[in-house]
Amino acid sequence: MGIVLYGGTIVTAVDVYQADVRIEGERIVAIGYEIKQPGDQVIDVEGCFLFPGGIDPHTHFDLPMGDFSTSDDFSSGTRAALLGGTTTILDYATQFKGETLKAGLMNWHKKAEDKCYVDYGFHMAITDWNDSIAREMSELIDQEGVSSFKLYMAYKNILQVDDGALLQALRQAGESGGLVCVHCENGDIVYNLVQDYVRQGKTSPKYHPLSRPPEVEEEATSRVITLAQIAGSPLYIVHLSSAGALQAVTNAKLKGLEVYAETCPQYLLLDDSYYSAEGFNGAKYVISPPLRPVQHQKVLWSGLKTGILDVVATDHCAFNYKGQKDKGLNDFSKIPNGAAGVETRMGLLYTYGVLPGKLTINDFVALTSTNAAKLFGLFPRKGTIAPGSDADLVVWDPRISSNIKADTLHQQVDYTPYEGFQQTGQGIHVFLRGKQVVQDGQLREHKPTGVYLSRKPFLKRKVGYNV
Image 1 (cartoon, helix red, strand yellow):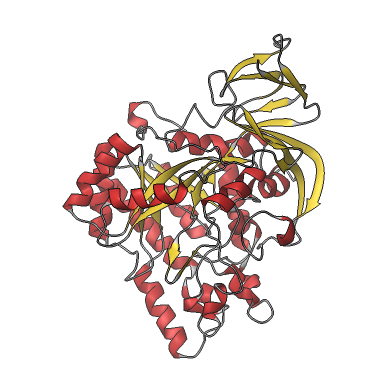
Image 2: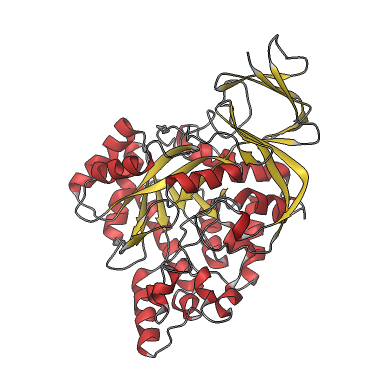
């Protein structure tokens, strides 16, 4: 007995066409007309789009931050993701100083096990570099299915690594089938600017973006691209937020370098004026990189349209305004950096990208699902609608309109940066590996059924890889 989705319009990164989809077990087994078999359940989805389940390759669930952790753990965060149309997340497991990579990975497995409402995998964030860690990178790729690694050029004395470690990590990953993801901000400059503002008594949230100007992102992006070129290795830039950084990526791609980049809805839709909100409300938007002046948005939208930017992720790193963000009430540098977005990503990109014509509907699927699947070793199991692929499907009804409000979202956080934004379209039904887990916009499966995804090594372009 299978399930047939009848009468919808299938959308992939390359096609838009009307056809029915038949699911049997966990997989898509047929696409076409008159494919119903005896005993099949038929679900009428006329008037709706069928998208491959969204893939958010940048989340931070249950991440320790001093004496507390992010407000969303794997249970609440993945439940919110699912209700927003995302069926796979890749979270940043973190190796803290003194730990082995395997120890850091095991810690994250414990956090996520039996809690995920979506399928999940891990990147490995590296904060402590030595020869032993270099050897472990290959072991994680070969034995644990972790084929991507993150290093930070920011957060001096906490997460930041130096250029020597970056170069070695890039070389090691390139040789082993890994892809290095990098947070690009010049941490030394940021550290000095923060200290200068605090010494001057300039401690309100509006000084956060001033302490991390676009130039520090542009410089770090250009520098790590140079390191990747020297290493002869591919590179993935996370949460790109500024025109200068985008130009650095553009220049690299024009040279034929294998450089990929993501941006996030916050950089497409919000700007630095939010830091001047009444009272301490600007703290809600303290993220890194920070929100930029509004003129950067047009450039980023263009980067998505032209394919310079490959992925729209969220960097979902939620902290409550009360009890967490307000730790920095008297010092912006103590405000935990991060905001929520895993539940609103697909709706925002459809509403503000596809509907006004900034993106085609195929662009939308590529940016929210397909490209991430290809880059992070999940394609074609994930990221497309095709026979043999996992039946991760979102039935998207474009006729539904709503207002985004914190009190109607499912994220475990007391505000949303998109409060009051209009949204058009909603994932009314969501299937995860063939099981209907969302029905009529409501969670149907109240027990987490997500599984860990062991990912394939990264395939360099020179051996036939191409997004």
